[in-house]
Length: 93
Image (cartoon, rainbow, N blue to C red):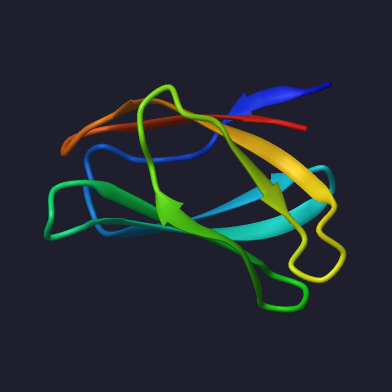
């Protein structure tokens, strides 16, 4: 199993877009701060523009990110320290 942290630049704040490569696949990450007071992350697989995750980030609550067709787990994200100024999200694959 490999691990890393998803890119987020606190200087940019919300919203922001980042690119990341996980397990030899490219993904676009879209971070935004919801008007109800929580962070939302959308993960889009670049090769086919499939949305593989779109949800609320809750501290210390892991999420399995799955292929929308096969339902195979692609990777797991673990929001670790998410607030209005920072978004530390660990990824495991």
